[in-house]
Image 1 (cartoon, rainbow, N blue to C red):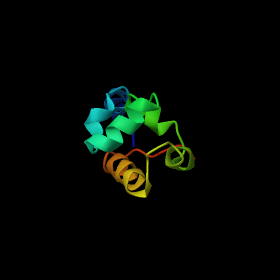
Image 2: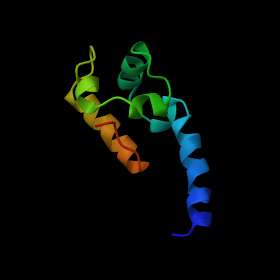
Image 3: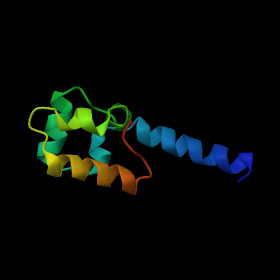
Length: 80
């Protein structure tokens, strides 16, 4: 990949990271739990490891799976 392609991809990724979590198209319940825990942007969510998300109050296994799958579809992942 040449530098021109890398530069073209980066702004789109930055834009997605700065977007509200609504772009992840999560269930209302999952979205509300993330917001209650001060996770409002996609970037906020990507900075939290799955283990820490899983221990959030009211965020169960299905919600965690929903988050991981939604982020994966967009080429993103949670922190390690």
